[in-house]
Length: 197
Length: 412
Image (cartoon, rainbow over all chains, first blue to last red; front, side, top):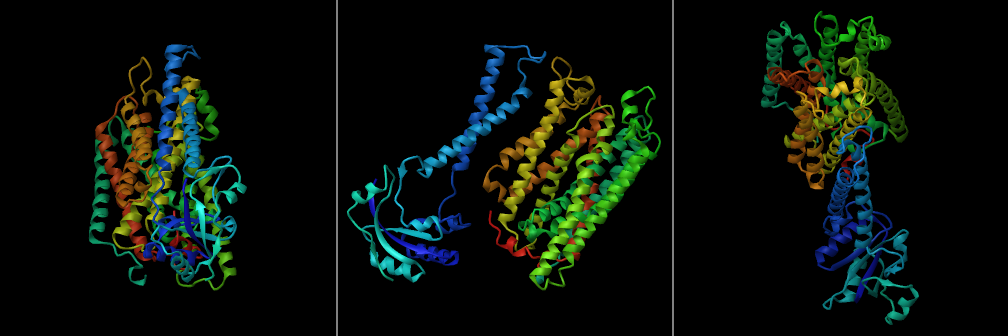
């Protein structure tokens, strides 16, 4: 939980955004994140983000599900409570495959959803700072994090130069908090200052 | 674009395809003298049947892929669409050869493949099935199937090629063009559904065990040949990339081809397992007879083909599942080609057990297996030959198709 300073700029078009991302990275500014209303193909690569490891997690959950299902069913039907079902052998693997498959899918799906929520810090009552409300509607919102060496007005002018609109500097909580958005106003005394480009 | 529009067949490619065809002809001759006239003529005919059915269905899967993507309004395949189109030209020579083989099996006396040809009057099951399994219907359907595949496939290719020299003038004519494509593609798909997905595997392959019942069989055969067909497309796309063609095709397209190979390997396994589990559960003798030579039953001697049966399960399911799961594996030329070869060999082996475990259930004849592989090499040679010819005659990029841009900017 740290309060940091950010320079925020809005973009209307993908082309402009991609060029701006390229220039921001070239200039060496610290890209905090880009908020978009819909997934944009290739933006993660352009931002230099690494591939998600959610797939690996999913594989691990799936394998865990397979192992649990097969081992517990085989233990139950051969050791714990053997039943004669239609004269089939106790170790009736073909009959267990559908259930094993379903359990694998269940574990992988539920595990991946929970992992996704954890990675994105999504949960009921968890609140995060909105840099610009129209990021959920029709604007691509680029957020640049300021370090102690950053000159905010220089960054603001730079962003306005590469096509950003509504460029402003915000001081915001980086992490999440529990509660409401009203509290946020009281938490931080610093107000949003808009820089005209 | 213009400089590399046509495939110039390299000398090595020609040599290889001729050599493979030579191996095929030689294998047929050797197999004929070794088995065709002896005690077990069904071995010789089985080798021909297996390869003729497998390779014809595999190359025809390319046309199915084109039609299915056309109906789905897919655009991503457009940058390499001429490759499956070229593969589907092989339906013509393979269709003729396979048609001759299928007709020879029923007309040449003493092939001993289909015993429903001369059913015992007291055989209730065969008498019951006689309405479907009879000579006139078999011959009509085989000929009709192959002819319509060739005709409809040619129409689809002609539709694609007619734009090469006359680009569409406006949006309205583009809409009309897409609609015309959709109509012909749906005709092909309907016929494909009536043949590959139902009747044809019943006639050509399942009727070897004429007393046996399975409702999964045709889907199983379709899945087997479709995944091999996607693997074949993958191999040719990577080959053309390595030769410096298909400049608009990249890893993104390969990734989607890899997804098809991965997904349909699992689909094949689903059908494999469904067929097996239902028969295992019901345990009715007239159904379980199919697995007698293929699987070791508990407490009994294992079937002669159980090794091949389980091996084909491993390389057709576990290998693609584990090796193609990673994103990187689907975007890598080497791993795609490796897996494509594994899949094609695996499904060829699956067809081998589908045919030979029924016509020669007691033991695996290694000599005939090697000769069958040789015959298969001949079919590969024919495929290479006609694909190379087709790609050297038509431009490699359908540059005037309305969806081509969608394919160029494709991102997975």
